[in-house]
Image 1 (cartoon, rainbow, N blue to C red):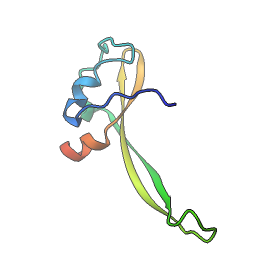
Image 2: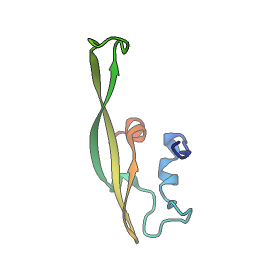
Image 3: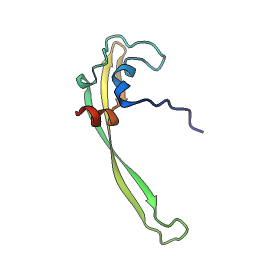
Image 4: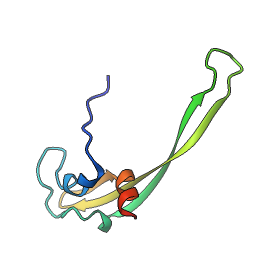
Length: 90
């Protein structure tokens, strides 16, 4: 079973990105995500129309995801910003 993943509203992303995975405040990063490099990744969501038959058609739809590569004193880290980019504009 996959580990629990905490979720929160996109409006909190700039604040939350200032905290490392260990729970410490990142040094050398003020939460300005617009100053970080924007990266995009295209994934696909696929579904089998009628999974009970061998002749079933599989249909796939593209899903665009956006990330920001930011830098703090320890190096670079990635933040998924897909929902945030939609609210704020890239």
